[in-house]
Image (tube, rainbow, N blue to C red; front, side, top):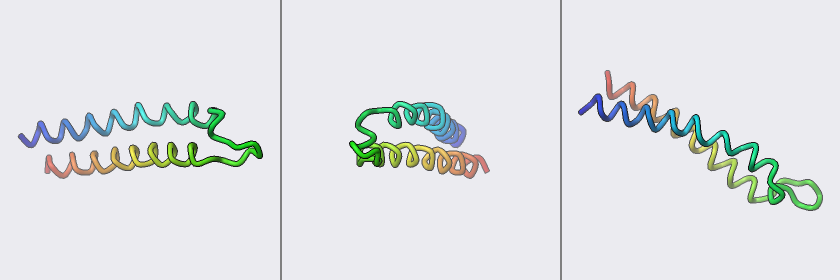
Length: 70
């Protein structure tokens, strides 16, 4: 069971690292990402927080996966 749990955690980490950062260029170039003055909007900030959260969860998943195996 420990091997399965570690595998799920590692797959989760891999998914988060591969998939979520690819959205950043699309978010940054979206017209909703800046206002008329070129300042970043809430749309941009929310999506950057989501991407950052996914990366943090990936790191936590890797650490948890390693700890499960130990």
